[in-house]
Length: 469
Image (cartoon, rainbow, N blue to C red; front, side, top):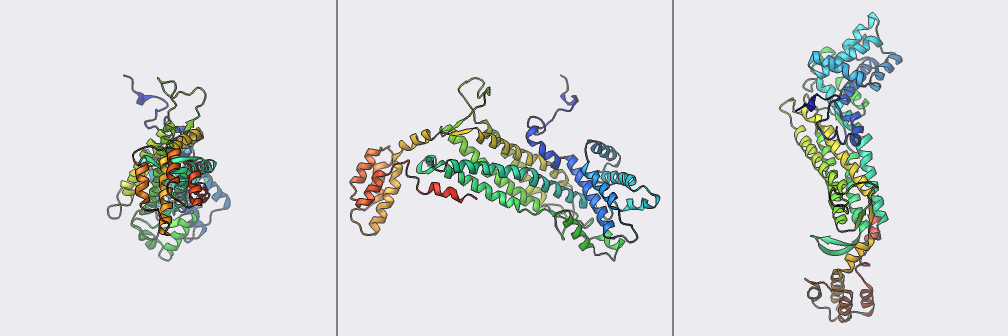
């Protein structure tokens, strides 16, 4: 059998880089190995600029504006050529961050080639342990992925659900609790509940802090303080980290403790779980006929049953949410632990961040496409309501309780009397109205209940949709 591993170009091993590449491609600019190296270069470049701009090392000249622009241009134009060059260097160094240091020194020699400037190269990676670079690079990567890709997609989906909720705010729906017919609601109100829950999680994600540390091999500024004892290194560190748009962490071991990552991944996973709930609810509404799927011309619902249109978008989303959450959960639980000052479990673990967000992003894409292909079927919802007049037992017995509490005679044992009428059997409108007429209710109350139907018994459901942001 021929080996597929030898194919050119290489065949993707995973679904995200194969079948679903188009849906998750925007994350490549933020969470790929190439993006990690680009952000490492960014941190090294900014550290060199920060040192020279602030005169941290006495006697070193300031970089010119043209040199600073050229250095930052290395990051902005970072692409396949640079990726290949770094890989070549790493084959020699067998160390990824050292490869970045040597790569930048090559570029610096081209930008500032004068003999008297050769000392500048010694400020590349000055005072740094690899984790000083890595933790900042990962913080920038994840922040960019969330702010530029994941969060906008998630917010757009929540607005899509909210818009559908507003459109269907007045469409009566037979609710089901424990799978049994229950107090009517509206489809809009039920979707609004999900939109509200999703939006709340996104607001938590939007407030997320992205922490960074820059304090040496064990978080003590050891080499820094002995090399340049007159420098206020905590202040330098804070200004540098905050200058990158991150929150400074003053107390760490060799690694930034990753607690912020665990917090973020927990919030994203919780959003995913609520979205999974939306998928299962909408799937169920489709199976009940409350939504019809609008199939695109030429699509196939089933390979053998021509009539079928399967709810594949929601099922695909469920699977990807489950895979994504498995990764987010293990990232959150593993990254907050490190043996003493440092072990390398986080190095391997963080390389799965892209996959975790990729599966979530793919789910967002599927849910959005699934919702866009739905048409509400109010007639199906109305038919189920018409078949379940017994749900009016709740408001009738509640009104009787209120009247009995006020001393109105004949209102005894309202729950028991309604249970006898409705428990275990279907009743129709005629039976309910006959029952109401025999209760001896005050005229205005009797008139209200004689006019009530399952379709009109939605109370404040429509108004509650207005609580969506």
